[in-house]
Length: 561
Image (cartoon, rainbow, N blue to C red; front, top):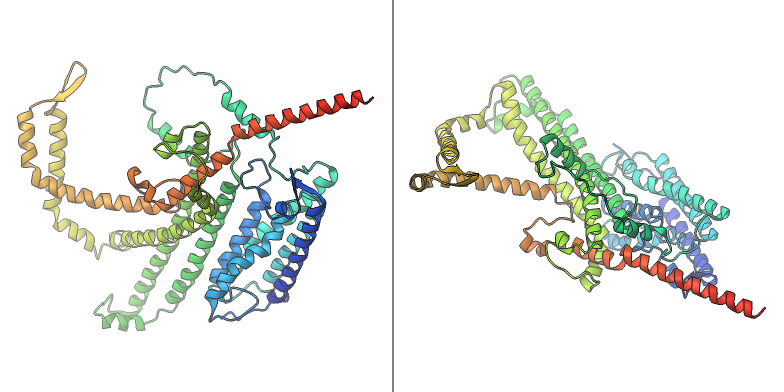
C-alpha cells in the first residue's frame, strides 16, 4: 500500500508563487514591448499577444514544440488526477475544476512561450528563469515523492518524464538564445522572415530542370524485393534540403508521440498490475468456485491452481503484446503520415489539387477551414488517444482467440473445439474448395483463348451452363467473402483510426469523415497563407523596395553635400 506523499515543495504554494511570477513576467514583457518595435508598424501589446507565428516556416520550432508538450502533459494529468487543480482538494466538483484547469494551464505556461517573442535579451533572461523554476521544482517534487498511490506507484513519475524532457529543453534553449544574443548572432526580427533564403531556395529547386534518365526497363514491373524495399521506404521520413515542415505539423508530430507514450503508460499501469495481483492471489478456492459452475479442470486442486495461473499469465502476455503492437502500429502510421504530409503540401504548392483531394477544390481561407486549422493539433492528439485504446482492445481480443482456441490446444493436444467444429464441416469446405478450383481451372484452360496476342472468351455455351450450375455454390462462397470483407474493413479502419490525413470512407462520401475533412481544410490554410513561391515573391519585392529607398537616400545625401 502506497500512502499519499506530500513533497517538500508544496504544490499549492508553488502554483501560487509561479502564477504571481508569471504575471510579473508578463508585465515586464508588456512594458518592454511598448519600448521597442515588435514588427512593421506594430508597437505595444499586439505582438506580445501573438507569441508564435504558426504560418512561418523559417522560425525556430523548438520553443513552441516544447511548450505544447508541457501543456499536453499537464492536461493529461488534469484528467487522470483526482485533484485537477492544486488550489483545492474538492473531489465532488471535479468536472468544474477540470473545466477551470483547461483554461488555467494554458495561461500558466503562456509566459514560457511569450519570453521568446520579442527576440530580446531581457526576454531570454526571463524565459531562462521561468523554465529553470518549472524544471527545478518538478524534478524536486519527483525526487521527494517518486511513488504515489495514483493508478500505480510509479505512474506519476513515468507520466512526468515527457514534461521533464520538454522543460529541460526550454532550460537549455533559452540560455542558448541569450548567449547567441550576446554574441550578436541571434536575429532580432520577430516578424515573419520574408528575407529568408528558404523560400528562394525552394523556388530554385522547383524550377531546376531535372535530368532525364533513359531506362530500357522503365515499363517492367519491379521485382518483389524491390517492391518490399519501396514499401518500407514509404514509411520512413527522411528530411529534404529544400523543404521545411510547417510549425503546426511539427507540433502535431511531437504531441502525437507524447500522446502515444501517455496512453500506453496508462493502459499498462491500469491493467497489468491488477492482472498480476489477481494471478498471485489464486489459491485452491478457485477449484471450488469453478466446480460451482460445473467446470472441472482437474481432480487435483493444485493442478487446477497451476492451470488457472498459466491461463491468467497467457492473458497478461496477450494484453501486453496487444498494447505493444498498437503502439508500434501507431508509430508506423505517424511516420507514414509525415511522408504524406510532405507529399500533399508539395503537390498543392505545384497546383496539383486533384491528386491530393481527388476532386477540384478552391484553395482559399474560409470559416470552416480556419476553425479546422486552429484545432488540427488538438484533434490529432485526440484521434491518436482513441485509436490506440480501440486498437489495444481489438488486438487483445484477437490474440486471446488465437492463443486459447488455436495455440494452447495444439500445444497440449486437447480442447480442440475450434478444430473439431471445422473438421465436422469438412464436406462443406471440400465443396467450396473444389468449386473455386473448378472455376479457376476452367477459366484458365477452357473459357479463355489467345489469338494473335489478344484474349477472348471461348466455349461460351459451356461457360453459361457452368455459371448457372454453380450459382447456389457461389452464394455460399459469397457469404464467406462478405465475412472476410467485414473483417478486413474493420481491421483496416481500426489500424488507421489515428490518422487524419486519409479518409476511412469511400471517395464519394469522404466529406462525411470529420477527421479527413479537418485535415483537408487545414491544408487549405497552410497552402493559401504560407505558399513558398508567394513568400519568395513578396521577399523579392520588399528587397527591391529597400534597395530603391536606399538609393534615393544616397542621392539626397549627395545633393545635400
